[in-house]
Image 1 (tube, rainbow, N blue to C red):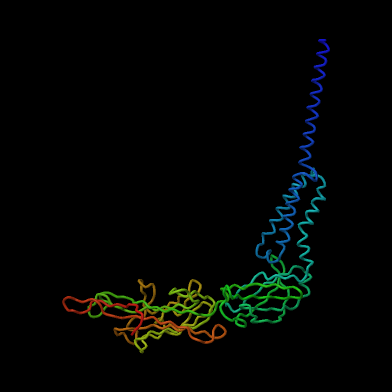
Image 2: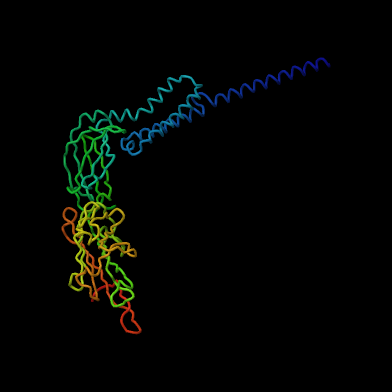
Length: 407
């Protein structure tokens, strides 16, 4: 009985050990099946990443996106690399050449398709020339076949949903840069300008080449050229002590002039700047109906204002205007630290009596920027004596004060 009992126990223990080994083998097989094979989790993840990369490749194969975002094409490549690694491991790192070829074909397929679809064009850039007279379109092709056959393009410009210009012009894909081949079309702004571009009235250019067409909304700041608001202002330059006659403590020794010309702004705010506008400015300060200061005519072309300085009597004769706002200083011959400008001394006025003065600024533009009409603004000022000397009863000060009118 005892031997049988011992023998039986040994047999039972052996059977238990075999069961454990068998169980371990089963677990190992299951674990192995989860990490390899066509239905494994890494394989599914790799296939999902490959699908994402393929979709991105098609989206980013557009010539416009390649031009605007040169490094965007790296994103699908990186995703393809991650997918390849997962699939490669899931297949036990076998058939490397087959997998690599498959991935190369997947990654290249959008670009191959683009190169075969001749006639697909994209307007990638619309650049304003340095003198603001032309807008140059850069047009990219999707394949070499297109580039070798095209010789003209139909171009249409619309403004506020109406066609304002259209023409058939010579065109070819005959240039190349780091992003590929392209052609250019130059449009002269004065040939089709109708008015200021706005959010609800954009300029849109459309280019048709064979069976392909593309459109682009042109930048509004390039096509805002019409002055529709003007402001004028003066500031009195004040002197003290020896600067003044009749022993006054303070006095007006001159006046600084300035104007603003540009886009209409809300309320009393200065007009918005128009750096590409062409116009002329005439500033005149009156005493009643008598001209006290007749400022030289200022001609503004593409942000550069110029006038006859009369050897420094009216400042330096030129200034940039438009980029940082619409303010146009109209300086005189004497510097004022307080005014941060040059003023026109009172001895250079044709009349310097006490009373009401008004400063009128008139802005004129010729076609096509406007219809030769004048946009103007007038501001009013009182030149007065103030204060009283207790001994003599004479005024002690002078003032230059803004007012609403000269009634």
